[in-house]
Image (cartoon, rainbow, N blue to C red; front, side):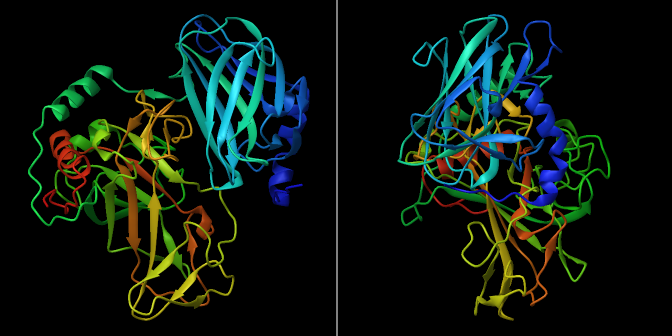
Length: 456
């Protein structure tokens, strides 16, 4: 049987949540009159088949339904789906391998299909992500809901912490930031009317352009996670828009246009946790932000909407990163890696090489929200080369490539957020619409490699 180790301090911190979860099956908030926001803890099932329980390291603690494989199911009674209208159905999942779906059905195990939640690897059995889908019609009021697991491969493929059901009118209260459809439609119309530039012969046919952004400043601020709360975050290193702080908004980014980026019409904000070596901050000279595509057909990609934001990685992931770990730091330059730090979590680079990291962001969007409560649930990674289902809109595949002016030593490093595994990055879009649109049209849609100027 698979085991997922959870740190002792996490178990102690979550003890109260476990007690509460044992006595309450539903957490209900009626902040909006139209419908309730209902969170159903996965361990609160009334009946099940093939389900185990374990302590979870997810935010909020408690237990999660674990060891879930194809054909397993859980039954939840008296789930209030609220009034008629749009319903956003979400599942908090973790998966190290495999893929599949969670079918939510009402009344009986084989009853009417309420929603299908896609499952793809999240990076580990305790690396949690929220997957969501919208339902336009559904039964109303109190319902019996079955969660049926459909795995694409044999064996366990997912853990589930909770389900949520957010009725029409509740999205703002739940932390979602809906896109302004009129503005987005106008931006899309402008983009679709653009005539693509001719790709010269001999161009490298890779869908890509970039923004090269010098380091700007450091602050213990995070305008996405802690908006309006100066000093509430760990230290971040900021790139791009020089005005970025805890009070940053889309309007402030567009109004304060000095940027460290090339091109100068990228007014976006980019940030990562500050790196420390021997308790001294090590700031990169620059970050290269690549905009590309991993899709089989990159021509379907559209620009980010103005004000779009998202986070990749997780500050709460504190696990060892020995050599060969996915997403780890590496050494760029002649000589490469010559060893590991004493704790094994960081590379030691040759004197001619620099510590480097590449952070990759999701590339499929729900098409409805500029942001979500965890700043990830409105986006997803493609796992089959296309964007579909709850995330039908293809957006540029963003990645941060950051090189630090150090080779490291046996003492290693630390991030402001903790271990190397806690590396994460934030993106707050404030590109000039025309500048971003032309780059997506010319470079990504045509599968042509472009430079920072957006030319071939």
